[in-house]
Length: 320
Image 1 (cartoon, rainbow, N blue to C red):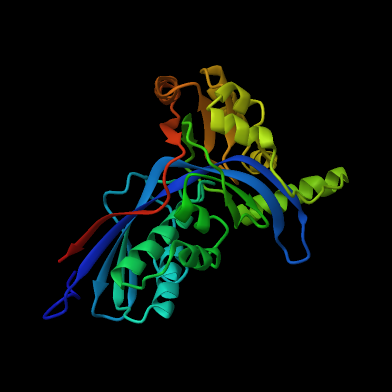
Image 2 (cartoon, rainbow, N blue to C red):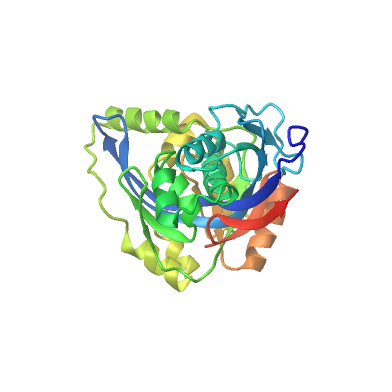
């Protein structure tokens, strides 16, 4: 970087953090504070964002998108200023760190933007960990998780990884001890969906039906059992996403995507979070690879992944 000159010792910490799939997502009624209580099972999957945080002598936070990104970002509006979650994460770390400097964040995008997989949250989690290391802040994982919760419900999970139950607005996390691997195929869309708009659409659909919805206070234990045993067939019977019908209302083509995936051999399919990414469950890595190839033959953008995987991790720390 041109800003790094003279005696200033620049350093780059590179961190990767995973995207997630909501294996189950129960959504409560609209609360007076404008939020919804949820009960969800998060699964971190092997599709990672990367953030390279480089110290600078400018005293400023700057953000760029790496040319190594695998997403087609033409026409995608990713803010590179204070609206960016990674920028916000760096600003929070600067406030709590005694020896903060300027920092440049280079983000390698792989998780779909506005795709229901928490890509921006993964960027924020990676930035928290990178800046903690860059500035020798010495924060514990619990302390970082507390800061992560200030940035959004999905950020603490991207930091934690693995499998977790999320309650409250999704940030009250309880790790679930899941070691068995499950295999998935992600079908991404060339458009995004606004999470607030999806929630508003769900509220509208429910209001039209006049059906009272209870506050969710627990997840279906069958979901955790199926994940722990790696039983894909059992898991296929308990997949649920209350937001799915709202996502389909806003993007009717998702219904065709779900149908095509199952016609091509998926055990089951589900919209991930607020969508529009669709996650298809497969019996094995080979089955997932075959399903992804078949879907690509039908002109879908499909990628085989697995979970659970670890949360945000430092992958390099280099003096420049």
